[in-house]
Image (tube, rainbow, N blue to C red; front, side, top):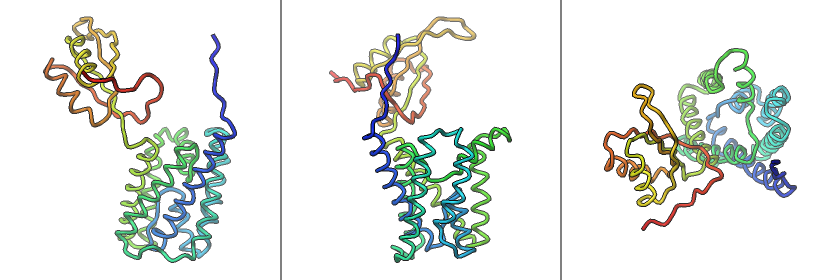
Length: 288
C-alpha cells in the first residue's frame, strides 16, 4: 500500500523565508544594539566573527558571512539542499542587517541589561530560524564533520569550540566580559529551546506495575489522558506484565504521580522530556 506524502507548496516556502528573515533581523538587532557595543559575544562562529571584527575594525557582517560560507559548502551533503539554502539566506540577511544597524545607538550601556535583553532577543532570533528549517551559525556543521573523525559527540565538540572562543574573549575584552558572554550564551540557549520546542513541554511517562489495569483506567478517568499498554516480561522474574505509556504536560506530572502511587506505591515511574509530539490523538478527554 503506497503512502501519500505532502509536498511543500510555494506558500510553505514563503512562510519559512518570512520567519527566517524576521529571525535573522532579530539576531542582528541583538548583536548590534545590545551585545557588541557592550563587549559581549555569542558562542560559535558568531563569537569568532565579533572578536575578529574587534581586532581588525572590519565590519562584523563580512566575517559572519565569509567564515560561515565554507562550512556551509563543506557540509552540504550532511544537511541537505533546503537547510543549506535557508541557512545561507538567513546568514546573508543577518550580515547585511548588522552593517545597517552598526551606526545605530545601542539601547543600553548597562551590561546586566544588555546580557538579559540581548540574550533573550538573540535566543528568540536563533530559535525562530531553527524552527523554520535554517540556522544562523555554522558551528554545528563543523561539529558534525569533526565528530566523524574524532569519535566525539557533536555536543562535546561544540562545547570545546565555545570554551576556546570564550577564553579568547577573555584576552581580547577582559575576563568580566567573557563571563558576561557565557551567561548570555546560556540565556540565549534556553530561550532558543522555548521558541523551537514551545512552552507547553510534554513529558513521556512509562509505568511498570502489576496493577497496570487499575492505573491505566485511573489515568484515563481522573487525568483525561489516553494510555498505551505494552507487553513486557521481567528480566529476572520472567513474569508477564504490561507497561503503561502515556504523554502528559509538565503541569500534569505531579497529579499523575499521585494517581499511580495511590494505587501502587511500589510502581516504577520513568519520566522523560519530549521535545516534540506529532500525530495521534493527543486531545485531552473530558474528566467526569
